[in-house]
Amino acid sequence: MIIRSGIRNLFILVLLVMSSCLYSQNKLKDTYPVPVKTDRLLFYLQRSKNKNTIIYELNTLPNGTVNKEEPVHPYWLRYEEGCKKTELSYIQKKLAFGIDAVLTDKEKGNYILTMVSYKDRSLFLQKRLINNIYRYRIFIVINGKISILQCIFVNAVDNYFGYPVVKSIELFGTDVKTGSNVYEKIPI
Image (cartoon, rainbow, N blue to C red):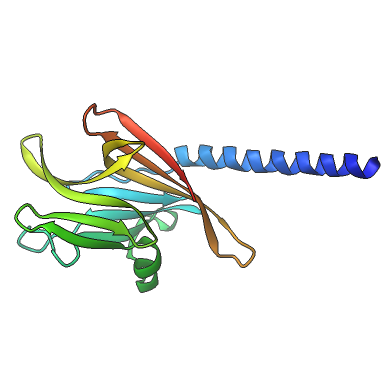
């Protein structure tokens, strides 16, 4: 009887600790820095590990046209190191945060993109008329709605060996039809 009670109390304690971690993780997300919007910023990715952010920018050539070989340029904005900008490592590009791009319409310059670490949901890089200026945006289906992607938040925990294991991905965007905010949490 005492053993059952002790196990039950331990189980309740574990649940309380886990729920407080999840609560604090969600509260932390609200305090993450938001990168400055620029004409080239397509979206950004943040992780539960720290506040360092991966910026995904439109990659243009010196003449202003989109680089057809690599239309999206991801890089770190290391907030925890004084907002230092650094390139992704080769491994980070190829296995975690890079993007594969396929040109689908040469005339319009549209691309289908996939994140190298999550190929289950496609992104669409397209030029659209916004405020009388043609601008590239990333389109994605979020919660069943065609949306402009604003940011991705990756919830991960370190496993026994210290490697991150993704638990969920959260997508934040703007509904193309209504202009309202949209959100979806994808369990992994």
